[in-house]
Image (cartoon, rainbow, N blue to C red; front, side):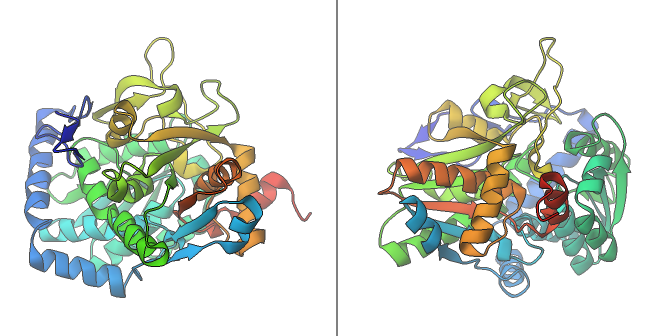
Length: 403
């Protein structure tokens, strides 16, 4: 696949689901047949007026879009650059996840499915999926690592209140990777009645394409809002990277604007040592996980390594294939922020602007602060992908603040 077409960066994969050398569909034939049905249905519905009218109505009147673009004047005054926050934390369910969950649930309903199967790390995707399933009258099974269930108890309770069946995963490290493994295994047994609603821009084709499509509303809104406020494009856009859904949603609108620098912020965790971070674009090598090819954290024997981040939604050992592609052609830069830097940013945004961010989003805030200090004349958009309610109990215990 060419990297450029008429000087425009391709935002869709080739017919085999590849972005350059990344992505694809590494599945057995039984799954390939089912995924072709999903692909075909999506390609028709994404351009269907009735489908889009129904989805847009839900995004506006149910999810609360457009989310605001807020000029963080206190943070900007303190650190130099003009910092704007795209407030995905204000969406119904408290994060960007509702964007693609409503789309996936509506797709499932149009396909005649009766159940959604999903995985979740921090629980934001789980809550959004449970919400969309309840709205559409679908059954919902959500797989979540035992450790993440303990860390993110408020979100677990929300999922159950919404009628979802939350299934604790006790294999391996008991976190996001294992939750994905378990969800895929369950899906294999229910292909006729269920759809797998993946939680990020990862997985086998067509899921990265589907999630990017539904999340691209973030970037379209932000670009329009910023131009109305500044009569220009931003100099830089910044978002955190786990699997990569909130970031690809923001980045997608600016890929062809060469003047706009793009930064994806990965979790450095405790250190650069393998097993102590989840920075797959920074430290990973090409490999295959969960049916697709990406930059992947691997040990010397080529086995998938353990991933770690203080933010449950970021501790995935791989990353979306579009991000791998953007890095390979030099269109986006990928940087790291440690646990401690993210925690500092969590409190800094809370105390400076009165906005409590999710730990995932705190990685993006931390890098924005660092970047603003070095580039005081720039105008920056940072995606606040979710609110921090879910993290408060864990943060208080972890930092022992106010004890």
